Structure formats: structure tokens, C-alpha cells
Length: 277
Image (tube, rainbow, N blue to C red; front, side, top):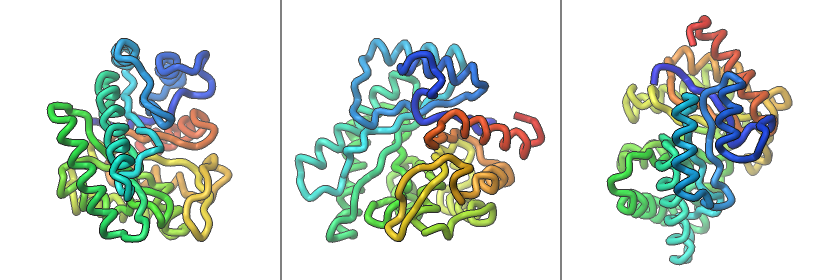
């Protein structure tokens, strides 16, 4: 990918209808070029609709990603819940591929009482996802998480990505919340990007899946998403870092105001890129 594509987590608020096709058209009208399909409450899209979503996304040159359901815990102590979680990721990936999406992200699970055992279960769960998706080309991208109770530090996901040859979704706002504000500012964000390059190679940052929003956190990590200007999260420094490190791929904005912050982010990206995007 030759640039960062920027879009919203789900259908923009200003779309005429609350469906994916209307959302893609509105993304194009706004001058954005990406959108995440939010399957967070379940994968309910029919194949015929998914194929039409793909056609419209191609027509309007909007790149798609997918967020799998929130009800995923590959580290559950209960086998039936792990199996249900695997199915949710697989279903999201299969429908996402029909839509032409390039990456599907999800929160992998919780540490519970035994973090080491949880990590092993998550690794096994992702392997099962890959086995069931044999032949599919959509990238499986577990997401960095915002709470210390959740599996998903940058280091954990880099290790999983390197070992299993899957992708990852770097949520910079989650890293900010999980670190209690320590990972913030251009230099800190550049360090994250350099770590990704070092572990996975420089080619990975040419096709990244990124989440970002304003963020409120407490001593327990993430509390809630905020709009950029209501948060101390340094979104300007992030744009600067992404441009300086020549990162390309897809940035999905998860702020409550969706397209407003997406347009703000794109304006900054255009400015820092010297108007070349």
C-alpha cells in the first residue's frame, strides 16, 4: 500500500442509512478511503450482501477491515466457550473475505488466574482459526489491548505474529491506556513502530492495521474512548511518527464522533506528508 488509508470504525454517523453499503458511499463522499465492518455484536451479514459490499467498496476505492465480535475469549477455561470464540473469528474472516476486507481483528482473551496457560490457549486457538481458514487470504490480526487483565501487550502479539505468521492490529490508544499514559507522544510512538520493524521486518509497516481514538484510562487501564480533543492522547504526535517512519496501511478511527476525528486525522496526515496523499 502506497499511503495510509484513513476511515471509521463502522458506518459514519452522517450516512443516510445505517448499513455497510451506505457507509462506504458516505466514506467516499467525505474524502476518506477506509472503513471497518463492525461485527462486534455477531456476524449476521448474508453472503449476497457481502458480495455487494465488495462491489461497492471496489467501485468507490474504499479499503475494508473487520472487527470480530466482542464475545471472543480464546483463553476461556471452558472448552465450549473457546470453540465458540474460534467460530466467531472464523465466521468474521469468511464473511470479511467475501466483502473484500484485508484484515480481521479481535481481542484474543483474558489472562485469568494463569497468564502462561492463557497465552498457550490463545496460541492454540489462533492455530485452529488458521486451520479452519486454510485457503483464505484475509489477514488474522489480534489487537493490542487496553487493560492489564487482557492478553495483548505489544510484545505478546509480536511474538504470536512472528511465530504463527499472522498479522496484528496496533491500537495506539490501547497502548497509551495500558501503559497509564507512558506510551504517548511522537518519540514513544516511533519506538513502537521501530519495535514492530525490528521483530517482524520493515515490510510489515507497509501494510499495517491500526486503531486510534482519544482515550480515558484509570489505574486499571482503558475506561472509554473519547474524541481526540477531549483526551490527552497525542494524536498529532502519532501522525507525525507514522509519516516519519513511512508507515502505510489502514488507520481506523474509533472516537465517538467517528468521521470528525477521521477527517481531522487525515488533514494532519496530508499536512505532515507535504500534501502528497
